[in-house]
Length: 186
Length: 420
Ligand code: SF4
Ligand code: SF4
Ligand code: SF4
Ligand code: SF4
Image (cartoon, rainbow over all chains, first blue to last red; front, side, top):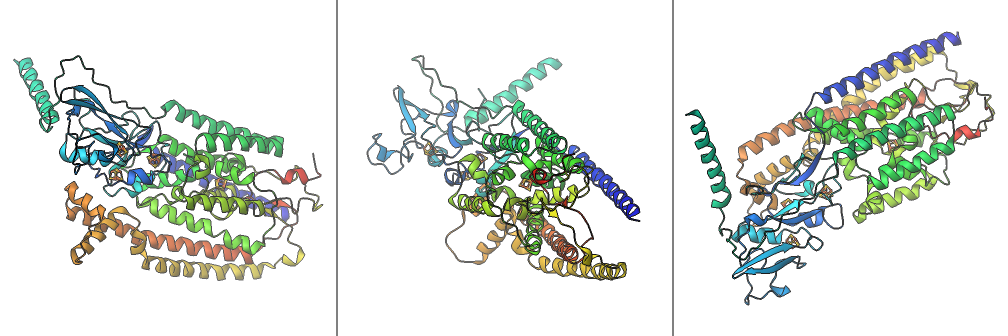
């Protein structure tokens, strides 16, 4: 009697087990037939970004993985850089009080009269986007915010993407992980 | 002839591109005569693809190893060391991402949104532990899951909980799972990742709030072993259900149990089913009556819960970005307020049409309505079944692991005097 009961239970178990196995198989097959990618990473589309400043504060890392990148071939090397200097500055000096960047991360180097090269010190940049906004408003838009992949830990759900008001974040293939505007068009 | 038109076309296109690139620039790039070398914009590559497959290999390797150690070697010590390895590798080295617990949402998102492109690792990390569990029980939880491992090392002074408390708290993971699936299926949010309490420790970085929650959970772990696993983890729900029907499973005694009661309090997770005693041997006509009763109660519960949940679908849908944006735009039209939310400014500057957005929001709202019915129904079903399980106790005479809730940690094995 007990043995028979045990056998029956074993039989039901086996049936359900096969059922679950088939279920997992179907889900697996269904998933494999969807759009697959070997690897994706988060990136900002500079065309959508409105430089709201959340990139500096929303990242799960203490030092945001979003940094300002400089696309040199788009830069006009302007003396009066609207990404470098505050718009309301009276005197055109390079004192910290006249700089737009809160951490003085932009380094300015004299090249040739009246041209200057601007270089972002990534260690200092906090990804606030102030310079990006300035450059985009009055300059060429050569300063752009991007997720720096050496720093980013590639969260399953990017914490900035969740906060970004312009839905500028998306997952892109890891083989072309940057979305810079005007980059590569030599 | 043909070739020359081609050349002309290419020239035209390249000049157009060049015009687009440089034509819009307010300040043309100067021509330097002093031999100035323009620096390159440095673009650092993400972690190489090879390492992703390496992670996968480590997952399969450690799962196979621990399964063998549990079922064949029956050695708690060895399981412990594999667990430490996983904690270091998947936890502190890989920073707790990607883990199977979160991959559940990627899979759901992919199933409901064909346009989402799911990484192969997402599928693998979801399926492989489930398959192992189907054959060998929850060996993944025993020592491969970094979330389980970090709690397990803190399980120092476990106390046992009343079984009804366990059952009641055990309802939370089902609700959590339901919510996680709802929000992932509607492409709204990944709540399991968002409220992952331990990932902050793995990254040495988190908001104060999440650190506090994680810290409290770890503190609780000292007395109530693995609180996240038992009373929160949504992936654990799936493993629990699958494990009940597993082909093999860790047993306390290697052969027949001699009912010596030595293992009775050895499980810190309350996952050992005790003999029920003769008074629980219910006559079958009573059992049949109870069964019929539950067959009536459960559908009723499902309907009530589903209906209740469906009343709240609009507040649930607010989590979705598009729905929230559409609502805000509607509201801003009716109100006189001066401050325009950033989202609306961003949306206006994007140049997308409001009609399209409203249309999309409507579709998502409908999904939430349906989803909430399902969520409620699911919760009702789980309530009903838990109730049934608390009153219908199967008669048994020996000590066995509960195949659903046992994490196969192999602690109890050391207490059993039967060694052959
Ligand atoms: S202004 Fe902000 S984004 Fe630009 S360099 Fe400075 S810190 Fe970085
Ligand atoms: S994926 Fe994570 S680490 Fe990377 S930018 Fe987003 S929040 Fe920061
Ligand atoms: S959160 Fe979005 S809009 Fe704001 S700065 Fe970052 S990418 Fe730009
Ligand atoms: S129950 Fe969840 S968190 Fe715990 S070990 Fe299992 S999968 Fe990991």
